[in-house]
Image 1 (cartoon, rainbow, N blue to C red):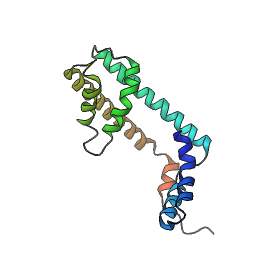
Image 2 (image 1 turned 180 degrees about the vertical axis):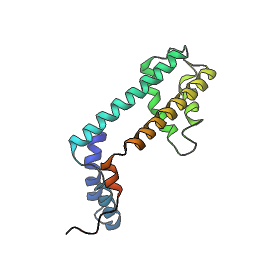
Image 3 (image 1 turned 60 degrees about the vertical axis):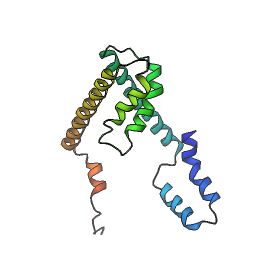
Image 4 (image 1 turned 135 degrees about the horizontal axis):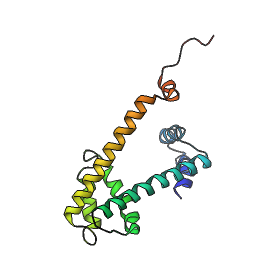
Length: 158
């Protein structure tokens, strides 16, 4: 459904906004910057599904390590909401918001508040370390394709 709305949403919006030239033009220009190929969108969606499933699996491992056996089905239901809440721009790296989400969804049935704080701290530590490693590797490898995209175009083509 999301993939279909990604492809057809801008077309529907521009058709509905025939009398609003400025808004329609803005939507058309904005949509040009995003992939339109169904194959590309399906690949991105699959990659995202794999990434988020791995992230939820890591939450499950943390729960097992904290001696709090939360069913993985519960984590697949709650962690996406917690991730959305923690990405809101109201805190630094979701700190506090994430833990509040854990408390709201998991404390009544599966975790104590102490386990929630430990889970939040472990997740923040894991995210910080993996981001640091990724940043260092990115800096050391310096992909030439990315560098050439960021460089200003040369003036001479002759």
